Length: 149
Image 1 (cartoon, helix red, strand yellow):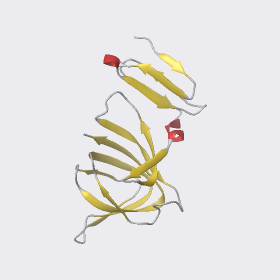
Image 2 (cartoon, one colour):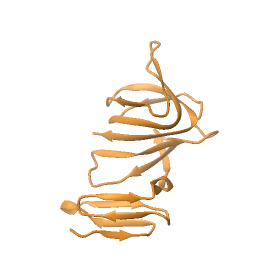
Image 3 (tube, rainbow, N blue to C red):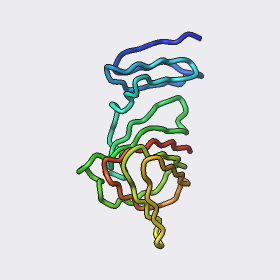
Image 4 (tube, rainbow, N blue to C red):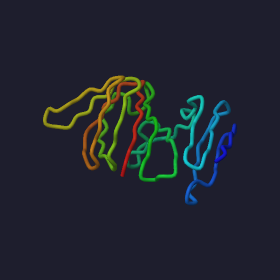
C-alpha cells in the first residue's frame, strides 16, 4: 500500500473498513497516513490541546491521538502552572481502564483511608474502570495515557 505525506493543519482519509482517521497538526508537523497506521512526525501532537472536561468543569488540557478504534484513546494530558487544577484537589472517577506514564511534574493521588501515592517523571500506573480517587497536580504536569474500554 502507498502512503500519503501531508503537511497541512488537518488530515482526513478513509481508513480500513470505512473508518476515518483525523489528526490535528501544526504547520511544522507531518503525518504519513497508511491504511493500517497514522504516524505523527516532529512530535507536534502537542499543538492540538483541548480542554479536558470532568463533568462540566474544564480540568487541564488533553491532546488526543485519534485513530480508527474508538475503544482506545491515547494522548498527552497537561496542567499549566497557575491554571486550574494546579494545586487544587480534584475528585475523579475512571470511565475506562487507564494506563499512564508521567512525563513532567508530580501528582498526588488519594484513594482514601490514608492511601496516597505520589507519581513523578518516569513513574507509571494503571487504574481500573470505576475506581475513584482525588488528584492534586503540581504543575507543570504532563502525562501520556492510554485508555481502554
